[in-house]
Length: 125
Image (cartoon, rainbow, N blue to C red; front, side, top):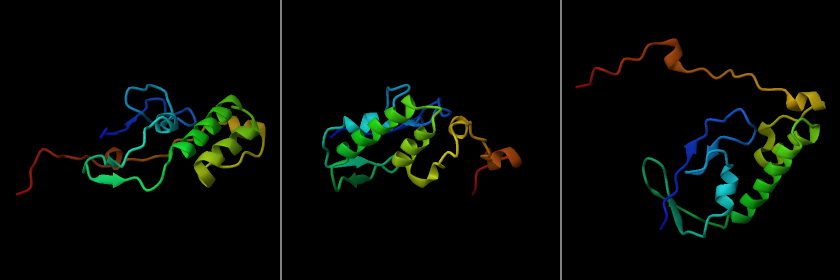
């Protein structure tokens, strides 16, 4: 049984980028998933517990992959946001105009380590 794990892509600015298959530098996770053979289960990251497959996901992954390609081809157009929304749901806002769809996002993510020093050199007894 093949083991599947995912890594983070360094190219997180591009829409659709993020989780990529091992060995793939810029591929979409859907590209990896659509080509997966049928398996009974996958191993969860960290715990390595079995996650059983309840239904075939390859057809949906292929459909999502094709929609991502369409969205990339339509980059800068209002219709691109609609394609991304079809794949990722309502978390992707609808563009009011073509200029809205090509506007970059504002990174507002904050990390506790940036606000408070973390010292892990001591061990708990």
